[in-house]
Image (cartoon, rainbow, N blue to C red; front, side, top):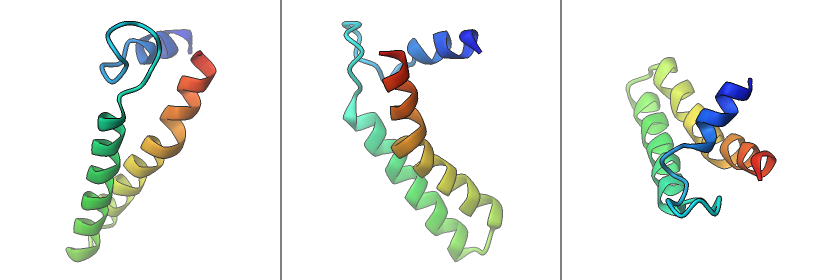
Length: 72
């Protein structure tokens, strides 16, 4: 588990100055991509795409900020 947290702490969406701040553009991109993928999944009736889109939205809004809060 510590390996995953270390890898996550070095993620590219963190600011390069090492202050632990997060790039809002990256979260917005992940969130937008999640919504677009989920909408596309609904249009073509693909449960896999809908689930992947929802997972991206969940990750961008809940999981990633929670892990970053635990790391700081």
